[in-house]
Length: 142
Image 1 (cartoon, rainbow, N blue to C red):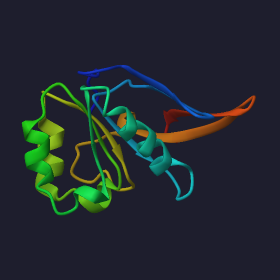
Image 2 (image 1 turned 90 degrees about the vertical axis):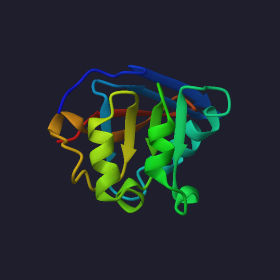
Image 3 (image 1 turned 90 degrees about the horizontal axis):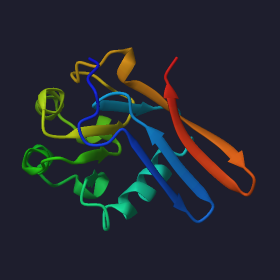
């Protein structure tokens, strides 16, 4: 399912020696990849930005006991970033996300089941050295 981003088509930040520079082509971006590639590290950088950027809502293992669907349904005009989504999201929440027309999603995990996702939604993290810094970008998966 391809639909243009509702909240932002570009997210960029610098954290010490790391650069995060994501360009979004879809409203739902599923970031997948092997363990150890930096997905959770990037999530932690984005989560820090949540304190100063009202357009961000970050959810991870710390929210495990929360009603995640309720958190998302109360959000409006947010880039909702969910780390370890394959563990945190139940089927009903996945379906809700697929039909949500108020928010945009960056879903970090390995299982896009029940998100009505197509290959246009699947991306992987790319890490490269740029001088003394490490830059993280996303590219289409496969």
